[in-house]
Image (cartoon, rainbow, N blue to C red):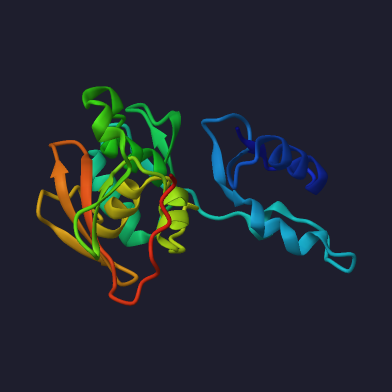
Length: 213
């Protein structure tokens, strides 16, 4: 989904509302002529009754460009260090072949693994000791927050595996540990492409987890 540089504010809002995306490549002639990136939130100031006239040039942000051949691990490192959320992917001839987001990269590395494990492994949370739990990497951040009373953001990633990957900035090996808001996440199981399971050490003063019956 793209926006054109000459579109009006109302036309841009129609596309944003219909698609529910937050970032849009802005083109001039066609998709091979990317002018920049528009963030939906940058349009909010123009929606006030006393706002100045809308101008695409005022809200356009530079587009990050990466080649198709760029390795995923290097791309993730660059996204993390430069705080990118989206990049335009170009082919060997300089044409635009698509776009990639940090969530795309994290989901690719974490992967879809339900079919490789038995039903017991589908349990998202299992208590090991008073303050330590085994958590499946594909458990959603929303379910984790509901269970453990935390408030981890799921704006950029959806799963605990993605959250841990984002905190590390690389694909961690088994045994690596990272602290996120006082919660210690230790990689308990991983392979060459993804995190499978983590052990979570809760702070001593954390609320009692609320597990469904």
